[in-house]
Image (cartoon, rainbow, N blue to C red):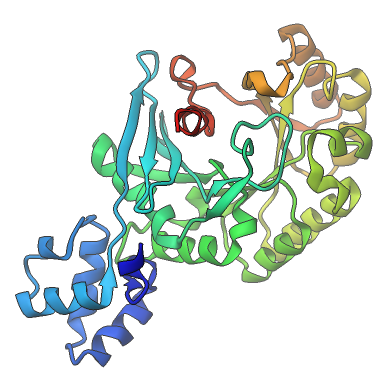
Length: 348
């Protein structure tokens, strides 16, 4: 890592910043576009950029460094082709991403932090806390290298892996601009979903950017008592404060919110919770995505029964709440994020 201290992360530069840097090095304007294309191939070293003069490649290597994760572990589901990656980053830390196949295209779920500081009781990603933020390049790498390794064209992205995206706000926004750029992967904002546990001030900040991505809010309980028990963030911004921010987000962007709701047996899946959730969301046009809980042994929590799920759905549908149940992909490889990294850290 010490050799990086005097060099800059070239893949985290926006196209206009890369252009300015190369012009300052005395290079013609077209060089920035060439380099940007190579960064999105992705190239693992400057030597691979074969249409650049050798002298320029040497100058780039002196001034910049390239991020390139290594595949520490790869699992492919025999049931549906879902691919799960455990990446080893340049500093030896690990994150996960998952490539999922759908009829409408291939989606990659990416991580935004090494570990997570939010402490949600049902989540494997937060065990052990947060280590550090990911750079924009390291988030982008998960998309680029997953596409290259899997040989599956990525058309959709969800920021729903390890970490809280809005806790790493600046790097995540930079990543969004990079992956959306026509000279790079050119993935439209409407094909990107960002999931947050509810950092209200950052939701408002994101709304001010008026991006056309889909905001998914991890709600998981409609009342403060239950939500505070399973999601510590609720002690800072309670349910009503969060829902008010969601309304402001919709008013500013025109993009309706999707609410994630993990069904936890005897915790948030009772008739009381179903009715209160309907009360809170009725008439908002919001979408509720019910999630069969992933079984994380350390949490002590268990998924709701199928009968409870059906009753919960019925209550919401009677109140005209748009509700779906997330299809569980890659069950044979534990495709939810956080589990492979946890296993790897336990081996250290």
